[in-house]
Image (cartoon, rainbow over all chains, first blue to last red; front, side, top):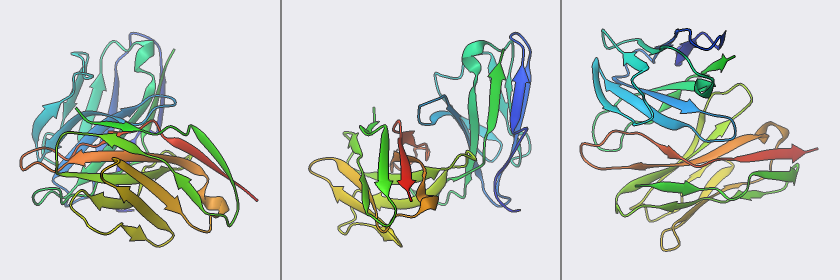
Length: 116
Length: 117
């Protein structure tokens, strides 16, 4: 399978625990995005990388959230001291950016987090 | 700031009929792109169709067409000859096409489409 893959697909955790999600983008894609989708809402932008550089973070990304893309390939999103409000689907997307408005985003199937 | 509005939380349509999903947008930037995505129960966002703000013709992709009315700031998705497999959530989204901006998408709240056999 050569699409965007995310792991784990589902995670149930207790409040206060740390969780980490992994995203493997399409191999030649230089940009990687994280979105959060809560029930009944559209996805909301969290952060994105171009290669290994994190270029923008949303105000939604509190200091309990950290994202990395250490070698410009896969990325991790860690949530520390989880809260019930963190329960959501975390979507990863990747694109091949070659200039203005040229990159189509390809999404993974998401990682669903439930915080008890 | 950009905003996408989808006013139809849910729609039921008979199989083989055409359906129009509404989308209005708000931005002061003259250069933008409009997208429609389909999200089945598996969770993956599937790209359907794209319309650039400077495109003079409405975009079409197979059974999907985008009814772009720039003056009214609307970008409705039309699905012709609906099929049972079209049942899913549909999201309208927008991206600004600035030179150094990222490609982040602003999504609407979605419309749940159910096709009735």
